Image (cartoon, rainbow, N blue to C red):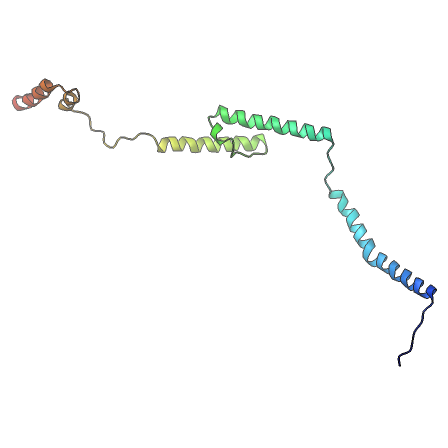
Length: 142
């Protein structure tokens, strides 16, 4: 049969204490050190006043964007324009203005033929039959 091994309570307590100390040293302490190193990168929590100021700055910038779009006739794009600063806004406004102008040019009226109306067509559009007959007769005798 297997031998029975018995430990005293003090031996058990000492073994547990040693295992705990070894675990703290090898596992827990490196994790705590790593956490403390990473805490320096944590963003600081803003106070209520700082949050209010940031919100006011964002509202002011949003109004600037809206006004700039309106000044350039681009207010229809207000819902799709998302910019972070004034320089980026200027770049986007310039690009959109160029695109809109090109669309206006592409969609502008271009007549199919540039044929000028002759004298007969002018009288015909006025429903002036005498003028129409006179034009035809003048070509016969002219």
